[in-house]
Length: 294
Ligand SMILES: [Zn+2]
View 1 (cartoon, rainbow, N blue to C red):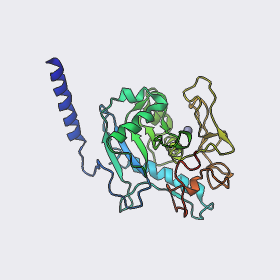
View 2: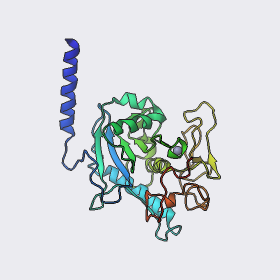
View 3: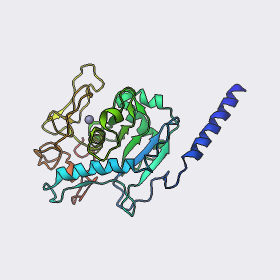
């Protein structure tokens, strides 16, 4: 009897939250695509007990993505395309981002406690709600906490083919002590550490840094949270630079500036972000995120 009462209470709580989440201008579905469907779909995802800060509505996410894309475009100018390239985010007819709001059925603690692996909880969680389009990759702005990191990503080039690795996430406010926002700048109209972390993770989900890159780095087994993780470079200043502890990053100045590891290189058979299906302008026979993976 008590159990039934608790269940009824939880159900009522759930429906009242669902009602409160309905707001003018908010989308709960991925809108019909205005492109060929290969795009980076952005989502504002909350845990069941998360506070709705309306990042999808108050242009915070829009500004974050704008800053990420601006940096990427600047660093790609005069390379494969004279005007540079842009990340192919999922947009609406009017060029605004198609952002989906989703409240999960999971409590924040069960996501937060997974630390760097929280993204591996989020990906199957959004997939259960239908956000698992094989053409898309997903960039989640998670409105909850993370006990260890500001952002993390799956690595499509580092798992066997057939294993889903299509999601990157930034955790806002992130770390429980010393949050993403306080330490990394939060949502501001600048390329701060929150922007840099977000772009770093989105580049991971597009396949960078591939294993076949000459300077590719795999962290050693040294008892840190990211033992054995690949996808980085040892070159300080590069957006894909990381150190083993995952605590300190270098300020990002470059996007593979020697064009030898993951952008506009001539290492045939190896993934190249300049030739990715998720950037525009797009080359004639673009690559998928798993390009070159056996
Ligand atoms: Zn990384």
